[in-house]
Every structure is written in C-alpha cells, then in structure tokens.
Amino acid sequence: MSASRPSPRLGSAEDPRGSRRERSRRNIQLAAVTSPRHARRTIRVEAARAAAKKNGSRPSSRYGASPRATSPRFKDKIKRKPNLLAAAKRVVVANQVHRTLSGLVKEKKLADAASEGRREALSGALAKVDHWDFNIWECVEACGGDVVLAAHSVVDAVVFTQRRAKPQHLLRPFVQKVLGTYQDVPYHNALHGADVLQGFHALLTESHALDASLDDDTVLVSLLAAISHDVGHPGLTNAYLVATSHELAIRYNDVSPLENMHARVALDLARPWMETLPPEDRRAGRALWIDLLLATDMKHHAGAIFDMQRALQKAQAAGGVYDAAEPAHQHETLKIFIHACDVSNPAKPWATYMKWTDLVMEEFWKQAELEAENGLAPTMPRKQNTDLAKFQLGFIGFIRPLFATANQIASVDFSAPLACLDESRRRWAEDPP
View (cartoon, rainbow, N blue to C red):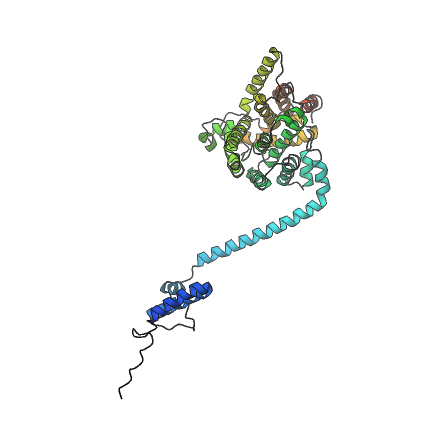
C-alpha cells in the first residue's frame, strides 16, 4: 500500500485555488462586479491585513483594523502634541459663525416685525414712485431709519415692479451687491443711488414719447447705471483726490477718477448678467453705461449745456426740432437725464430738498476740514464761514440752465423740476430757514 500524498497547505503554491494574494485579487474583482459596497469593504479589509502584516501586528477585528489606524503617518499625528493656537482659532471662528447666524436670525425677526408695523406706510410712500414729487424720506421713516433698506425698497419698486426687469435671478444679486458696495458716508450712499434711479425713472415716465421710443435693453442699462452711478464713493470730490495724489487719481491719470471707478466697479458687478447678452448688445450696453456714468462728472456740466443748446439751435435753423425720441438723439438725452438727476436736490419739493441739503453740506464741511489740515487750497467752505442761503442760491443758478435746456428738447418734460427749482430759489431769497 503506497503512502498517501499529503494535502497541499492552504494558500501555498500547490493549492489549486491559487495563492492567498491571487484569491484576494479574484475576490475583489468579483465583488467589484457584484457589489460596489462589498468591494469597498473587501479592499479595506485587505489593505488592513497588509498593513498589519507589515507592522507585525494583528488586525483588531474580524474585518481588520482601519488602514488609517495602522498607518505610521496616522500614528504620528496621534502622538503629536495638540496645536493649541489652531484649536483656539477654530473656537473663535465657530463663535463668529454662531454670532453671525444669530444676528441674521435677529435681523430677520426685526425686519419681519418692522414690515408688519410699517408695511402700510411704506406702501403709501412708494405709491408715488413714478412721479417727480416722490418723497424718499417717507420710505426711510417707514423702514425705521434704515437708509439701505429704504434704498432696496425703492429700487425694487422701480426696477422690478414698475419696469419688470428680467432676469431677476441675475439682476437682484447685482442690485444687492451694488447697494452693499456704497460706503457709509453722509450723502453719497446707497440712498442717493436709489434717489437718482427714482428721479431718472420719473423723468422717463413723464416724457412719454421718449420712454416709448427706447428699447427694453437701453432702459434697463440706463436704470442700472443710475443705481450704480456713485457706487463706492468715498465722500470726497475729484479735485481733492487729485490734489492729494489719491490712489484713484493716480490709477486714472487725474481724469474723472471717481466716475471711472464707479463704472469699473459697476460693470464688474454686472458681469454675470451682461455675459448672457449677445456680443453686440453687450458692447452697446457697456458703452452706454460708461457714457452715462462719465456724464455725471461736474467738469462736463457747462460743456453738456453748450452742446445741447447748439444742437437745439441747429435743428431749429433747419426748420425742425431736436427730438429725443429719434434714435440718433436718445443717448445724448439720457446723459442729460442722469446728470440732471444727480444734481437735482434743489429741484425736488422743499421738504425733501432740505434733508438732502443737510447731508451734502455735512460731506462738504468734512472735506473743508481735511483741506485745512493738509494745507490745500480750499474748494469747499468751512462750516463756520458758510452762508447757506448764498451757497444754495449760487448752486441753483448754476444748475438751472441745465434743466431749462433739457425742457426745450422735444419729447422731454422737465416742467416739474423747473417749478421746484424756482420755488426753492424764491424761498432762499425771501425767507431762508
């Protein structure tokens, strides 16, 4: 009787099922085909076993220890001393996030409570948003004195309710970013941007023929330019920035530094919407936007009046009229509109005008103090030397020719602003406050 041949050791080379490594590879391949979840577990187990064998230890469970737990790098991390500074920073960040979220919740509750109590007042104030005698300060009062919230309400009423601008999912974020980019200065803030927008909208609404002749894209770009015309304004004039070699003056070579900055910031914020426009419309919209914002520089004031008066005379000499509704005249008229709205405080009803006067004079007086501190030639009067009635009468005389010239353009109606200007001039001359 011959001796029986011993059975091959499991996992040896003689094992017909192959070596353990080969069987593991086959199991992984089979699991990957049949069950991705099982494949991941199998891979984890095999990796744990390999790591345990390499380190001379045994897996901690039937499925093997986690590969991360057996990794020398992970062990080093466990043994490393805790980074107290990093832990402290994480605690600070966590507390800041908590406070921010708590603050947002409180603000929302306050806003909800305010909207419940003041909704009727705000609705009543916004009812006249299409008219020149709209009082934006009633919106501020209805919003509890929050000028940014009031600005949002005015912009929403004009752009999205009255003008029905689209697409809202791109334009609303733009409006929010623009109003949030205005600085917290007395006059050139988000409320001033909303006020110029409302005035522009009112002039368009009351100039029916011009409004009807403009395409939707031109109207939308004009309104967005009005909102953003002073975005980021520091509360100082171009003359002061140039005299002090401010960064903006250097960047734009002393040429309309503020207006160039406003245009750059506004168009950068508007990029997500403008990129959806066809290339030709995008170029035209960008050019109009830039032209409108550069037209708000006061150094162009006299030139704008002269050019428009010459165009009116030329049309009259030819036996015709200068009609703003004609495509060739639309952009020049819109430039007159935005410039007029930007300097229109004395052309508003008296109560509205006086509140704006207090704020703009506060900015002027602050610049006057800075000029005195830096030894600069004064461009603004100091508070103790200001004759307010004389100052305002001089400004009214300076801007009235702009409104009178605009009122001569066919399809344009500036009668309401002119009436307010004349009333303001009478009150300063006869019975100054």
